[in-house]
Length: 97
Image 1 (cartoon, one colour):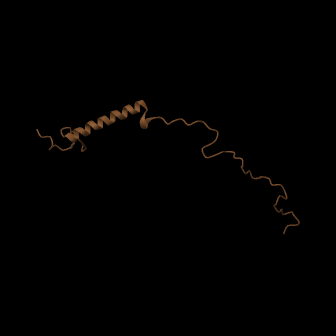
Image 2: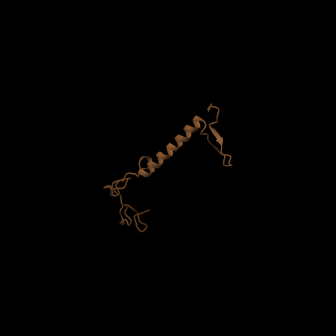
Image 3: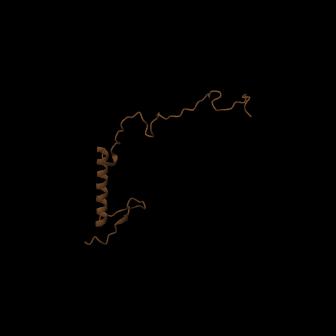
């Protein structure tokens, strides 16, 4: 029996209009076996938590955030209540304009 004239995909016999692999075609049979093998390998990887399913490596705890030192030595803290006469003119200053 020559199996090369069978199509790779055939209509599903479950009453839907979907196409499925044809096990009577060598390419269809290879696609069925490779799909099953892929699914089994993925399930094993998920169960063992390896490969793409491995948990991320824990990062060491640090007091310094990732974006830099929170209190660098050159931190500028603006003077909230400037002292009078520290370079600013006051409305009550008679020498002002």
